[in-house]
Image 1 (tube, rainbow, N blue to C red):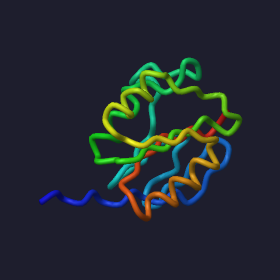
Image 2: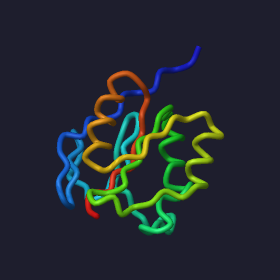
Image 3: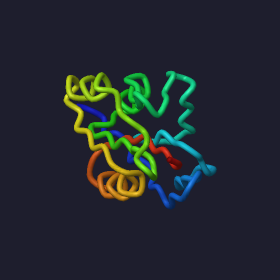
Length: 125
């Protein structure tokens, strides 16, 4: 019998430079996943706006049991997503949605009610 992944915490608010995840201090950029959240430190994987979100950025979401991943492109949609990141998710059978940040937060909050979801959220450009 497979264990059910815990729910992902709800994102209560997003504004320029700030992401409020219930049960956590405010973040600038965040990784949110089944059972938790933490600051998303781009230096860990060498992420930059171009080429964008790296495969290593989504590994932690997968490790925590995300079956769907929401990737935010920033408030002004300046953050890209590496093709290798999308391929990794597809190869693992993980659904992915790439959206502008406010739209990504709204979609994440909808999905968290019915599926193990993880997300990467960039709160500025």
